Length: 389
Ligand SMILES: Cc1ncc(COP(=O)(O)O)c(C=O)c1O
Image 1 (tube, rainbow, N blue to C red):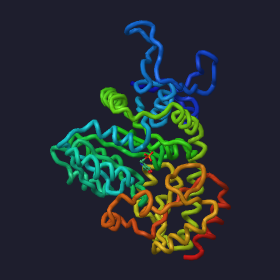
Image 2 (cartoon, rainbow, N blue to C red; image 1 turned 90 degrees about the horizontal axis):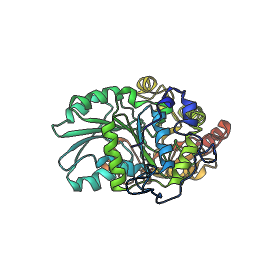
Image 3 (cartoon, rainbow, N blue to C red; image 1 turned 90 degrees about the vertical axis):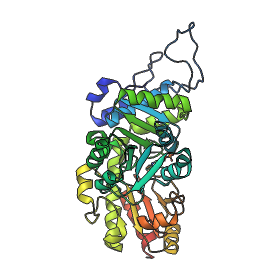
Image 4 (cartoon, helix red, strand yellow; image 1 turned 135 degrees about the vertical axis):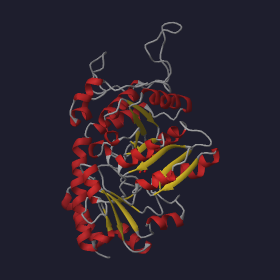
C-alpha cells in the first residue's frame, strides 16, 4: 500500500507539487524519478526481496505518482490506474451484487455508461439524482446504499454539489462519499476537507496537463479502504505504465502554475461570451449569473477553464466549431492547449437522448477547455468563431 511521506504534508501546495513523493534516486542522485521499465525484480532468496516482486503489484515510478497526488489532495494513500474510467471500474469492485449506489445525474458520459451498461449486468443498482440538492440524496437512500458518487463541477453542465451536505447525506446512511475532482483539481477544491471518503481523478486531464497520456488515480485516508483498493489494483490489474506515471508526475510539478492561468483565461472568455451572447447561454461557475455561483465561491478557490455555451442548434454549434483557429475540436480537456467539443456527439454520446434533454445537454451545446495561451489570442479566436451567432 502506497502511503504518502508524512513530512510532505507540512509543505505548501506548490512545493508539494514539485517534490512530494520524490526523493533523489539513491544510485545516481537523479533529480527526476527514474522510469522503472521492468516487469519483475530480482529476489535474494525465498521471501527475501527489496519490497518489489512483480510490476503489476508494485512499481517505484507509480508509487511516486501515488504519493505525489495523495499529498496534493491532502490524503494518506494513492492508488493509480490505467485510465480515469479504469479507476472508477476498480472502485466499483469494492461493492457487490445487491448493493445500491446513488450517483449524480450529470457525471461524465463514460462513468454513466460504465454503471448503466456494464455494472447493472452484475446486479449492482444505481439511482441517478440531481445532487445539487442534498435532500435528493437522502431521499434516494435505501438500506442497501453503499456509496454516493458525485462530480462537481459536472461535465458539461457545470452543476455544483455542496460536498459537505453530500457527505452528511451519505454518512447518515453509512455510505461512502466518492468525489470525481477532475474538473476542479486539488488546487481549487479540497473534497477531503468537506467529508469525502475517496477522491478520484482522470489524470489524463489537468493533473497531467499536457495531453500526452491517459490515467486515473484514487486517493483516500482510511488505511483499510486503501488496502482494499490496492488489492483490487493488483487483483484486477488495470495498472498504468511506468512511463505514463512519469508523464503525470512531470505534469503535476506545474499544476500550481497552470491552474491560475486556466482560471484567468476561463473567466475572461466566459465574461466575453456572456456579454456578447447573453448570460443565460453561458455556463461557468465563476459568472455571477451561474445559479450556484455563491456555493462555487465558497467551496472552490477558483473556477478553472471549463465553459459550456448554448449556441441554439447543432448546425450553429458545427458552424462555430469549424471557425475556431486556436481552440482545437477534440475530446478531452485540461491540457495547456485550448480545446472545444460537442458533448452531445462526443463525450456524452453514450447518455440517452431523453436523459440529455432532462439535463439541458442539447445538440447546440459546446464545451470549451481554455488552455494557458495568451488571453488576447483566445479572446480573438472566440470573437471570430462566435460572431456568426
Ligand atoms: C470528469 C471526468 N471523469 C472521468 C473521466 C474518465 O477519464 P479517462 O478518459 O482518463 O478514462 C473523464 C474523461 O473525460 C472526465 O471528464
